[in-house]
Length: 90
Image 1 (cartoon, rainbow, N blue to C red):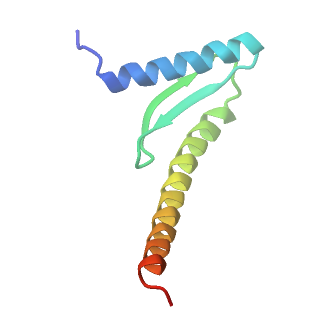
Image 2 (image 1 turned 180 degrees about the vertical axis):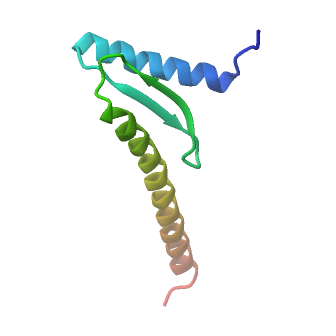
């Protein structure tokens, strides 16, 4: 039997926390976790969740990664611009 990696343990814990909360409020959900490139790493669907939720959960996870990547790029560019303008006043 293979041992689970630390990443797998974290993904399982995150998923279980979300599933427990969803169950406590009576809302079936789908959990989708992707890596930094948007590749699906973990997926769990509660039995009563809508089928369309499968696609939506994966799309949301991918979009979150893409948005963060674009935000970080924006922050880096503007941070560099701020540093440049501080070092080289016009």
